[in-house]
Length: 254
Image (cartoon, rainbow, N blue to C red; front, side, top):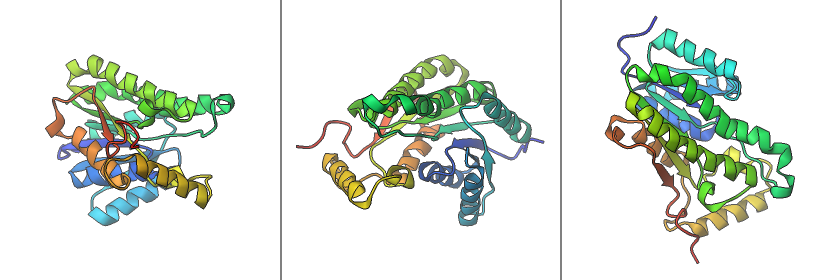
C-alpha cells in the first residue's frame, strides 16, 4: 500500500552506474524515497545498499530494461502500487559507441534505444502518475550535443535535448517540468571502458584543456545539478539544458 508519510518519490535509471548512483545518493539525502533501476539488477541493488548504509535511508534497487516497454510499464505500475506517486524521474541510463561515422551502423540502434527511446518510454509511462502531484523530469545529456562526438552518441544526446524541450511544453500544463543536464567528461567506469591507460590519460588531458574551470566534473557535480532541477526551488524552470562542463560547452580553449 502507498505510504502516506512519503514526501517525494524518485526514480533514477542507470542506477548501477556512477552518475545514477551519485544522483540517487544526492536525492536520498534531500529527502526523497529513491528507486534505482538498471538492466544490471544486481548492480542496482548493490548501489541501493551502499546508499542505505551511508544514509540509513531506504533505497530500492530494481532490474529493468529501459528500452523494453513491458519492463517500463511494470516498473511504473509497481511504483504506483507501492508509493502512490512519482515526483522525480531521472533518465541517467546511457550507452556509447566510440567508432567513427563509417562504423556507426552496428551500434546505432542500441545507442539510440538506450539514450533516446528509453527516456521517451519512461516519460510516457510516468506522465499520468507524476501528473497527480506534479513533478520534475531530468534527462542526462552530454556536451557532445553541441560539440559533436561519436555519431550515434552525439545524435542521441542531441535528440534528447529535442525531446526535453518538446515534453517541457506538453507536460508543463500538468505541473511537470522537464530539463536536461549535459556534463562534459566525467571519470567513471563508463568513460574508461575499453580504453588503455595511455589512451584514457590523453582523453582526460584534452578535456581538461577545454575547460575554463580547472579540472573535470565529478559524478557529484552532476548529481548536484540534477537535484536542483528536480527540487521545488526549480519549479518554474523547464525546457532548459544545464551544462556541467566548466565552460567547455562554450568553445575549446586555445
